[in-house]
Amino acid sequence: MSEMLKCPILKELIGYFKLNDAVHLEEGGVALLRYMRCEIGSHPFANSLPPGIFLDLKLADTWGTCKNTIMHYKNCPPDILTVRESVGVQAFYELQKNFPEMEIALVSALTDIPEAEIVARYGQTPWMKIANDIERIEAEYKKYLEWVHSSTVNKPFSMVVCSPLEVQALDSLFAGRYQFIVPGIRDAWMLKGQQARSTGIRQALNSGATYVVVGAQMTQGSPRKGVSVEESRTMTLREVVRSSRVVVEPNNPLQTLVNCTGFYQSRCDADGKIVGPLVGYAGKDETGKNFVGACYINLATVEERPRVLAHFARTLAENIKGIIGDDCVDVFLGAPMGGLLLAGALSQEMNVRTAFAEKKVKALSDSTTGVKEESELVISRHTINKGDRVIIVEDLCNNFSTTSKLVNLIETLGGVVVGIACILNRSPGCIWLELPVMSVIHKPLPQYRQDDPEVAHLVRDGNVVWKPKYEWSKLLATMQKK
Image (cartoon, rainbow, N blue to C red; front, side, top):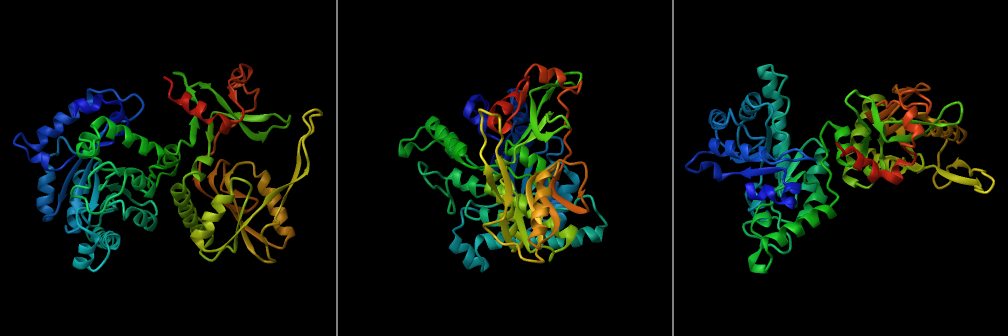
């Protein structure tokens, strides 16, 4: 393991070290975990968290035996523990109660069993079996919590183990409620071995895997195909980089946005003063100068990742239903340009019509005279009917200048605006002109006039990125500086 942690590629890729039968060695599992923790702690991880321990025991006994087994690790607990679907719900409860920091991963359909065998034995496909196990365990667990009058352990597990062939359907069905650990990774240069349901690593990550189990591909290579360990590691890293993987954090949309590299925060010094660079905002003060700030949310990074966009759309749809009801909207109207894809995703989620507004140029800009382009918002591609209940969709809401124009346009066409929906609401409140502002993230971000004493020296020194999206990689790089 020490040698693996010295490999730059592995240090970049490894999130957890997985143990299963290795904990039954003569020296004992507890001693092995302690040794691994010590080894991990001896290696620096400058830009990431050190790897965790994934104990793949697949516990499948009575609740007392499950509890007694894991209690051996009380003083050196793993970060993730696997448990079979066959245990009673009390086993999940006891494990959660005694190890609240440990993540429990459900194992329902082993990846070495062919789909035909699972269908023959259980009368359902692998993904259906896993989905049914999740829902039924959840239902019985809820009853158990009511019986023991407990409200502190509200989920039996937070992770699910499945093959890469099931992860996309499960990720879509459970809408970000669980993270998925996906074994069965066998790229084209590897032999399949014992895996019956497998894909390459990039396909698994693109399908929704949170973590993938990659053993032989990283430690042995494929000698029979003439691929060395070093070559296999390099090709694996290349596949990971080419994937669209983003860890969707259940119930933590801001962290999901950070995982998309969509969040910038200026560094501060030891006294808490902003170091910069600052970023320019679209809003302007009464003198016509743009506001500046220390944070920037780049929601284009969400649009590039369909799984994250779909997850945010599901979350936002639930917010909309909770605030103004299920049958509350006839049209989601996307504001150009940031609201277009989100409006389409919301329409799919709630099965209602989509419409887009567009910018129509009235007069071109002239750099020689300093004349700016003149444009107006129009709805020409789609139709707003009289009486249509419309929700205006934007990626980010703050000063509502575009929103105001769209309200006037929709009302002119006979529609009725019933709310505003967005991924991020930067404004202080959740109501604008008596309309609800429904968002995935509500995070007011401070903005400053350019002559504000807190930031004036940074503006004066030119330490401002006025078009953050065009220099996004530069901004993210500054966050890594010490």
